[in-house]
Image 1 (cartoon, rainbow, N blue to C red):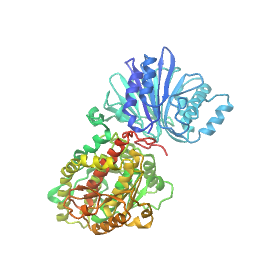
Image 2: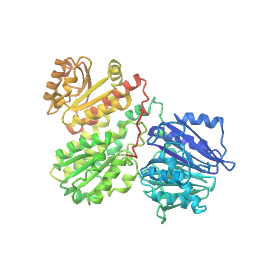
Image 3: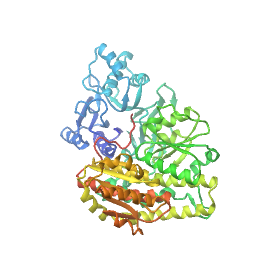
Image 4: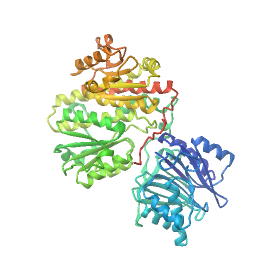
Length: 612
């Protein structure tokens, strides 16, 4: 969600470096931006509701020469997106500046205490309260900014990632986290703190990741890390695997389009080195230590949010079919609060692209408290979920910048198919069946290419329906989660109301919505439920609904029933979602572009939801 960047080092354009870092984090979603720097002994704060470019304009009109700066992109929680509520926030004397991701849940209590002590507050934010609270403790201590910050954070309830600078101690940046990611990039005579590695990759690939309830004091000469309860720790240095090119658009109009077209390679990367074709099985090294636990698991639970939840639904079908293990899929936001029934031999998989999703992280912590095994399926190496789970599998999709997930979804489906095969071969799935699945997986990248080649046809369909106020997406079996995902993509980026349903449920309510103005997208592939789906199409046609069908390329019946047909190659039923979702991604993309929507940064949304 919100983005944090800070710089301390040998260069005197720290504010410019911070602003450039904030531009790398724009994909996370935000509504205001700002920067604070120390120049000539004074604190200078430039901030504005709007885009990073607006803050950059302020910086051009008021250049700052400094080797120390922090910056922020804000996604509003407490207070409207205004200039006053934008970060950084400063104390009453403008000597401390702070940026903050997260929510201070007890800020009202702290605020009342500060007002009683005579401190004043100008904004509507919980962040300003935290800033002034640190100032009040600094005053009471008679100095020592680090200790004031530490003591303040021991009293804070809720989630936070903070970066703080001060003219009182102008030789350091203080950072800390609980529930909101932060890292320190280690450069040559300089350090860059950030909430996302994308902001530091231009300068260094060496980083340390702060764990929950840890803080770092970063100076010109080095850094020290300790816990918020004042225990010194030694943090391990990690190497970022991707390069700057992977977070650039590479000639595409939008990151989303680039990421859609990357899917042949990202799907291949997800299975690379993991398939053992001659044996009809897979090698998942990240699960080796829990292999026996998985073999004997009486139940598997997937917990996830958004697109990852839809991938989990497909994974449920896959594992139950191939491995015959009962699977449950839970919204992480509900799972964490409903006192779930968990046993010690249950296995719970958290699925998250970022590995930082607050609800999903809380869900696995709840599972661990109850004694279940918590495993992860994530994209970002070094993420909190990757570090806090017992074992897991990386999807290797590379950085995903577009807010609407595309390549991460298909990579998740790839890993889930590998997991289903892995578990199936542990149990009753034959070698022959395993070989068939491995061969089918290996064909998928080329099959994805053939679907992407139909982009112009899909764009023409988008032109016809771009002004429709509503869409319905229908699928059955493996394609029901795809219907959910297709509807989500459309409403995320085009702001058109869309709903996904199991096709058979259409008669239980949604049919009332069908008329000649309603586009209905059917995923109608030739599986065991094909005839049922054709009957559902007939019902829609009888109500004059407009039918867009995703169908197999050798289907000669569907053209008689549908207004438009987009074809996909044949594959095994449990791999069909990887292919059937691609036309829906492109359809959503082109409709959004034709409606002049901000595809990569849709309104009100953030890439990684790190607060409740």
